[in-house]
Length: 76
Image (cartoon, rainbow, N blue to C red):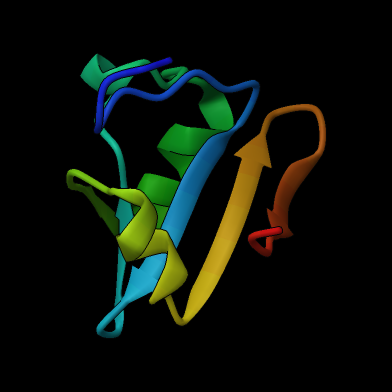
């Protein structure tokens, strides 16, 4: 099991919280890919520590990778 704030994923997660787009740092285990870089500029988004409770209170969630693009996401 990963420590809090450490991510293991095939995509990057973006959460809109309080009107601001946030995404975990690449140092937390995310991929520093092309789609992530594009979304960091275009949303714009900033890096932040995101915990499960942050994702639950997010106004919107996106899952993104270069192959599929940015897609709306929901927590199951």
